[in-house]
Length: 122
Picture 1 (cartoon, one colour):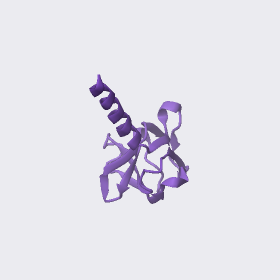
Picture 2: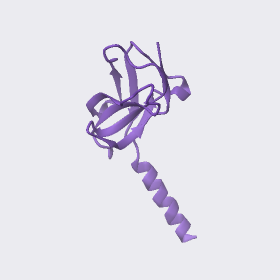
Picture 3: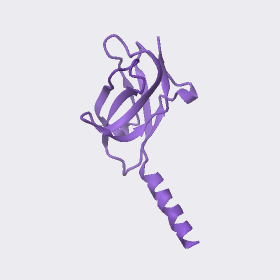
C-alpha cells in the first residue's frame, strides 16, 4: 500500500516537472497555419522551466519537410506566445506538422515540449 502511494507521488512529480505545454498550433482544435501568413505559437510554462528555448517546425513525413526548420531561437519562455513569420516562399504545405521546443538549434534532441499535429494550408 505504501509503495503505491510513493509511486503515485513520484509520477505526479515527474508529470509536473515537464511543464512547457504548446497550446497553439493545435490541429485537434482546428488551429492550423496558412503558408503565407504568420503562424502563432502559444504555450504555458512554470517557473522551473528553462527560460529560453528554440522553436522548430518538424514533420515525420520527409517528403513534405526534408529537414526540420528552426523558426526562432533564444525565445523568452515568459512571453507565452509568438507570431512566426513565414520563410521566403512560405511555410511548406501539408499535414502532420509539429512544433518542437528544443534546448538550442544545434541540440534538437533535447525536446522541452511538442505540439499536437497540425496542417499548413495555402
